[in-house]
Length: 263
Length: 284
Picture 1: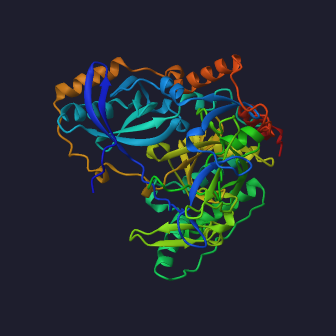
Picture 2: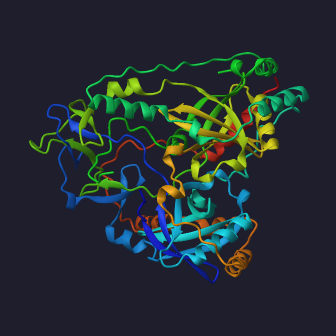
Picture 3: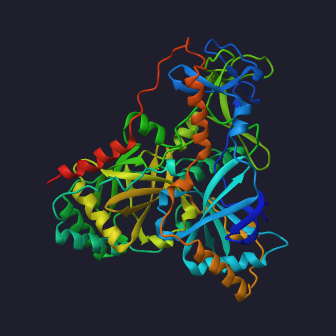
């Protein structure tokens, strides 16, 4: 089933234009619950109340920023409107940087950019040029009254736009010094290297599951059918030996064969 | 998701460790990273924080308000004990689920990130990345920490695991950069779409002249590094400026309702520096 676009715009790369449509790349798979009244099973409502429990009518409610404990600066709806960025349909490309320049902490949420119906020649030309460049575009756009910064890259033969965190949101790490100490032991380094390469493999995202989420979904579906499934128990593991000893034993376990691999 | 859907208030666990770590300076999670039989005690701190200017809901005289549940029929207040969670199945049937049932389904507390496989860092699409953390050595684990960081950075490998943090299960990548171990929680495969799920049109062969035009445009905008200035949250800056201006004009409310203030906000950077240097004391 095709997904509906959430936004339509124009991607500007220098003086070139690419007509695009924006699609969410994340699916919400969590179980969502409503709050029901236990006694009647009917939906509950929410209201805003004072500490005393007294209700405050919706039109008397205001928003405020707490500058000191208990003291607020009121921010009115019209103030918020005025501070909003001007509406635009353009995604502006600011620069292209080598992909390794962007640390993992910058990436927030992915979207696909698909070609606009009546203009897809430029789209696939840009995809191909971007694939060859090995660079990531840094872009800026305004969508529904909010300004975003994003990283533009490709996925298969399509454009992937990943919303990035703002620069105030990322902890600057160039000021952080790594833990230091005496030179690492050559034998331990060699054993650790051997251990890591023995555990080398491909990234297969399909091999990992959110067991908790799946248990909740199975549980509610089973309950809807009038059943009561039993719950699995997860075991904890502990360790304690010296680093040298742990490395030696791990390598020995690996050499005995994969079935003996530490669980 | 339906708009009228009410977010649960019963278990308001923080989704993001930023606030907790900034207020207390305590790690968001503590446990071990293990590979083979090697086990490294670590503390986990958020590597990001929100720039959003959070506003409170106030009454007409600047009194902070709270959210309350009530029965639409009688108008009466409902205590937490008088409410229950309901789940609507695809067939539209509503099933109630108790807190006790959810607790029994919750993953057992585990304090271990067991790296099951090491993959080339270039193999992981950043579309999986959700939230970044910095790991610091704990319990004199400095040597093992440095060893793992050194090997992973040298071989450009990333360790993959699933683990439990604050009652939720996470897929995580453990990576090393500049001698520091980092964790990145990732989306599970069934949470991301591929271009075919979206139904994007089939690729058309572009002309080499058009590709060349874009190639030139990319070259012209090519730079070596990010410019942090062009990535600022200017909306948050405008908001804070506006708030400071009103404050200077003494346009404030609510002072006659003093309440216990939040603990002093800790500089996360200082917390990280202190925790990272703790491994140095280790002379095993």
